[in-house]
Length: 358
Image (cartoon, rainbow, N blue to C red; front, side, top):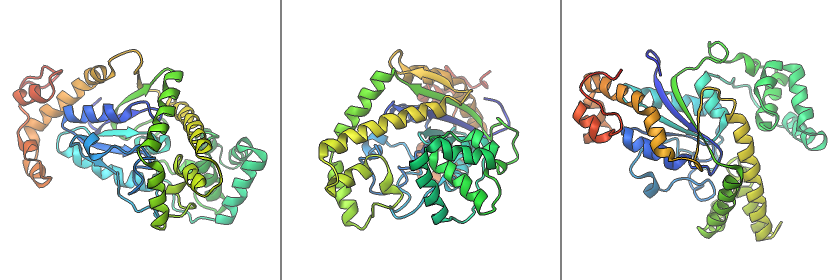
């Protein structure tokens, strides 16, 4: 991390790899807060199928962009970036480093690289035509259409990021500004934040076994009842939230379109495919430090990696931290000046003193 820009720690990786546990542990040690980079966690009532951490699992750590929308609302990358930026700014202003736990690759990329997607209105008929082309002629064909119209966007969007490919074509169709041209004043590859990226992975078979087991656990925890309740409350199957993996299949089973066993198998299969796509996307993050949970104590390793940055931020906070801001947030402990003694208490790996970290 370098001086000048606001700081951010990013933890990314495929679904079920272990991002939640690591981000919470880091946030506890840093006395910081977590931003969710998961497009499903924004919805109230979508808890079990989205693997949303429970209040107990959060261990008192503040989580932003979780449970902020009703199921009927749409949510997209533009809204994510607009809401995430002021949160990152506020936490930095308090002398702390926020942690972004990301599973939605486009959200992470847009935030870090400063993309601003234009607000061209939708053309549902044209979108349905493109979706049908994807089914009849394949996603590669639709991606090829984008390459002809907006080569830069096609180069940036993976063929399997089909919804964004369709959106880019839709923008061009409606005469809007090309999505590839809306990047906010940064040169290609430059980042908006002084960021430290940790990528998490597991051996493929181990990850797939975790995914399959997690799906079984979701049903044991009451996923079917959760979906029944959502449907009874008026949530429809064509709403964005109900199209998420786990929810659409469970709703199909409840509607008699498949057996319970078929629903479970389909969710497991779709989640494994999703994890594979996530890894393909995240591996483009060239500055990420990859940690493999099968091979090492990732928690201690991650803490060691971010300790110098955390120590530097905390030392700066001890000199300039606004205690009134902490009190307003209802955290009296945060109002303590972060002297070397407090640093050692809350960040034992740094060996911090009252001198600025080198």
